[in-house]
Amino acid sequence: MTDRDLREVMTRFADSSREWVSPAVTLVSQRGKDPFKVLVSCILSLRTQDRTTGAASERLFSRAPDVETLAGLPRETVEQAIFPVGFYRTKATQLIEIAQRLRDEYGGRVPDEIDELLTFKGVGRKTANLVVTLGYGKPGICVDTHVHRICNRLGYVTTRTPDETEMALRSKLPPEYWIGINDLLVMCGQNLCLPVSPRCSICPIAHLCARNGVERSR
Image 1: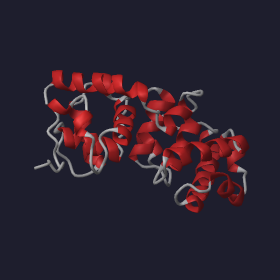
Image 2: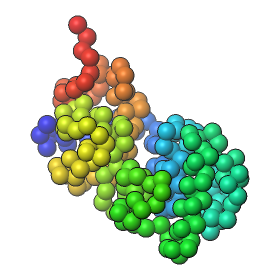
Image 3: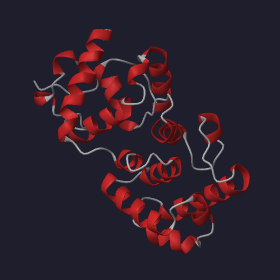
C-alpha cells in the first residue's frame, strides 16, 4: 500500500465515521481531556462493550471525579459503580491501587509518558497510548484488536500481535495519522470491517484492500 493509498483510506474512513458513534473512551476525553478519566475509562473498557463502558464510567465519575476521591473509596463501592464491566472486581481493586499510587507518588497527576504509565498494574500499551494521546494530545499510536486486524487485513502491515503492529506503525505510519488512527479503525471495525463476515461489498476502500484473512466468496 502506497502513501497515496493510505491517504485515501484514512480520508474515506473519516468521511464514513460521521455516521458512526465514537468509542466510549474518546467520548470521555472530549468532555474535558482529563487524563485521569481517560485512564479509568480505558481500564474499564478492556473486555467490555462500549455501551457498558460509557455507563459504568459515568456512574464511577459521579462518585469519584478525581484521584483523591477514588483513592479513598471502599472497593465494594467501586465494584457497584462499574458492574457489569468485564472482570469488575479485579478492575475495582486495580483502579483504587492506581489512584492511591497517583496520590502518594505523583501528587494526583497522571504521568504523560508511556514507559511511566506501564509501571502501573493493569496498564498495558493500549491504555498507556490512549492516555498520552487523548489525555495529553501527545504523539502515540494506540493499537487494539480492531487496529491490529484492519491494518493486517489491508496489507499495510504483516504482524502477529497488537504490540508488533504498534511498532510496525511507528516505523512507517505518517505522524499526522498517529493519534487519529485508533478512533477511525475502532469505529470501522465495529461498523464495517467486522472480525467475522466483514462488509466488503459496501466498504469505500475495498478496491485498495488486500483482504488478508478474509474468506472470499466462490
